[in-house]
Every structure is written in structure tokens, then in C-alpha cells.
Image (cartoon, rainbow, N blue to C red; front, side, top):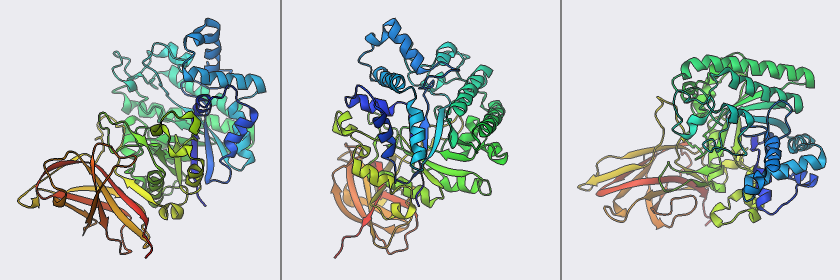
Length: 519
């Protein structure tokens, strides 16, 4: 039985439908969106209620619906008629008027009908378009309090510095109001505090003292959840999204030790931020830390993938094979569930070019993934590609984590040194073959015959030079090597790469696992 946690963001549904030509969302459209997830491995569905502010008619805080209606009255929607976000909000507002309810409420009811546990998710510090003087995405609170940012001692000099600072009591009070209303309005299995939008939530230089402020905030949230339990007559669980490593979470000011020791949270999702899925998260370490605690550990994976932050080469979408590989490795390391962020459905007619057509737009492949990724055995038996990636954010004082690129050199027919890369693959079946694919820069300075590759201390045989395939960087030279599978390959791989003569740089590395060809 697989277990997938699924996050649906506040605007993807209407954004994609608007791009596909919809001028109205019907009740059938809203329900069918959820019904497509019936009979998948999704057990818990997180409905994100908004970005900077709620995407429904809130009675306690400003919300995007009020902003849209104000823009209409002021003629600003005419000025922004080509803005896909503005026209998407129009679809939401029209649906609410037509049916007298919100999309979120319809989705929650439909999820319950098909046996998937509904959650609501609150983005605790969303700052999309924060640097713009005005945006429809800005909540009234953000617009009126943007000076209460984490760099309030000076002018913000970077994107994350626009994030609001929880050291201000007004910021904490605002988000408690948002949480309180969400728990009063929606009857759900639980509420998620998405601190990864954004984890930069404490003033620069005040992260340590802010830890105690956040701990008190979490106790207030817990009290609100208990009040909601009395209202709805059932438990209301609390989930949090946190960074990939325990050290990083603490350095940002998020003391999950306190929360777990005092029973304040039920689910911890550890995750990258956005720019790449992270295939090197220490899920096994998290599992040991949480041993004996009544806490579910979910491993978050992103739809984007990249070896590192390479200038001029933005991240690309995962393929089915790279995404199922990430899930397989997380299962092996002990994750209780796979958490999918930005793995939302794609409509082929909403995409304008091939690079934008992720596998989620292929209905058959999308369904297969959602019926596979939550189960270790099924993921392990799949054709998969384990890519060396990186961690896309870091806290002050925490070393940025990436394994690539590396420089290789050799002389007198021997490598000067070997570079070693680590990647968890999970189990490898005796029936599977293993291929290593490495991407190097440049045409000069080395010969492919001088490359030496080992996998877990066993030499690998050169196969061929191969053309790049998604999501690899298109400008590199790729060489493939065969690794022996004698049935006892460890589920954590160490690749050693050396060069006997010349110099080059390695910018991509992956381990492909697939079925052996029948003879």
C-alpha cells in the first residue's frame, strides 16, 4: 500500500485552465479535478488556501478576492488584462459567485467522498513578486507592513530579505488569525504550516532568539487546533514543511526538537525549496532523530531538477524516471510518505512549447507515477535515473551543499586524484542493469579512453559517448559506463571518477537502473 502526500497550490488549477482557454469553471470542472486522483496512492491531499493572502472570501483578513474586486472598480484589471494571474483570479471569483461556495470547500468535500484525507495548507510567509511596487498577489497585510521585513534595519537587497519577520508581534498575530479562520471555516483532517514559503522568517541576526518566539507561536497554533477539534468533533492534526537537514532547520530558528518532544506536530515534511529536487537529503538521519516520537516523516520532492545552480542553465522538469528514482531512494532511507510539491496535473493544450510539457501533462504517465511512487517495491522495480543534485537554499553558517561540478586532472597515465560522489539509490534487483552517465565540458584537454570510473569499489566498463536527454544539460559531452550487478549491490552508491591524462570538469552524474534485456 503506497502513501503519497500531495500539495495543490492556490492558483495552479485556474492558471492552467485559463491558459487552456477556459473562460469559466463549472462545478463538474472542480469535482473532476479531484476525482482524477481516486484510486491512486495519494492518501493525504493538502489544499493550499493562498499565497500572501487567502484565495477565498475571508471574513477576518484581506484576501485576493477583495483585491481583485477593488482592481475592477479602479480599472486596474483593464491595465493588466494580459496578466494570466489576474485573469485566473477572475475565474475563482466567478466560481464563488456562481455557486455560492469556494473551490477549496468543493475539493475538500470531494476528497472526503473518495477516501482521501483532506488538509488545508497555509503558506507562512509567501513573498511572490515582493519586490514589485504593486501586485495582485500582495495581501493587504503585506502591502501595509512590508517594512516589517527581516532586513528592516536597512533596505532589502535580495528576494528573501522581503520576507516578513516573525519577531514582530503583528506578523505572528496576522498568521494566527489566518490559521484560526481556516480551522473554523474548513472541516479537515489537519492543517499544514508551510514554512518553506518562506523559511527566511526571522530577522537577520535574530535567528537564535527567534527560536523561542517560534516555539511560542507553535504552542498558539496547537491551542487553535485543539479548539477546532471541539468544534468539529474529531482530531485536527498539525503538519509542518521544513528544510532538508536538521541543522539547517535549527539555524533558521525552527526548533523541531521542542515541537516533537511536546507533541505539537504530527507530520514533518523535509524538503528542498523549489529550484531542484534534492536527492541527498539525510532522511535516514531524520528518521533516527524522530525515533520514538509519534511523528510521521514525509520526504518532499520537487518537480524541478538540476545538478547545481549553473549560470545560464535554469532547472528543468523531472522526467518520470528521475522522479520515481527520488521516491525510491527516500523510501529506502525510511520516509513514511512521499510528499509531492508542484506535481500538479498538466493540460497539454495549456503548454506553449515542448520544454514546458512535463510528464504530468501525459495523463497515462501521470497516473502511473501516482500509482507507483508511494510504494517502495513498485518504485524499486521501475526504470529509474538517480541524478546527483544539490540543496537550493542554505542558512547563515551552514555550508551550502552540492557535489558538482568537480575538476578532474591526471598526468603520466594516472589520475592526480579521484572525485567521489554519493547517491542513495535504494535496492537494486538481480534482474536490473546499471548504467552510469557522466557529463563533461569541452572537447579538448582529455580523451574518453583516459576516464576511470568505479562504483562501490568495482571498475565500470566504458560503453559509448551518448547524446544528452532530458533533463541533462544540452551543452555537455556524455559518456556511459556499465556497472556490474552481481545481485549484492549496496543501496547507497559511491561513484569514483578519475582522469589519467589532461584536465576536464564534470557537471552531471547519474545512475540509471533498468531491466536487463532478455536473451
